[in-house]
Image 1: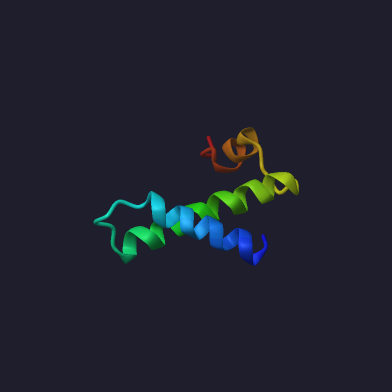
Image 2 (image 1 turned 90 degrees about the vertical axis):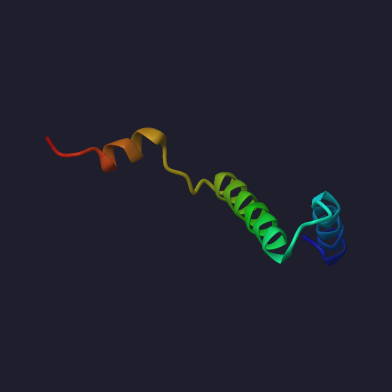
Length: 62
């Protein structure tokens, strides 16, 4: 993401915040946005594990 696009994204994040927002609200919104973008990038690059694989990994031994 280029600097110009990043600035536009930040401006939009600020516009979407309520007027009584504080620093914690802003930081949370940035964190969520970054986490979603990283997850989408992981999917695009094939760094995923299926639901079934996770179930097998964490299934209690009988």
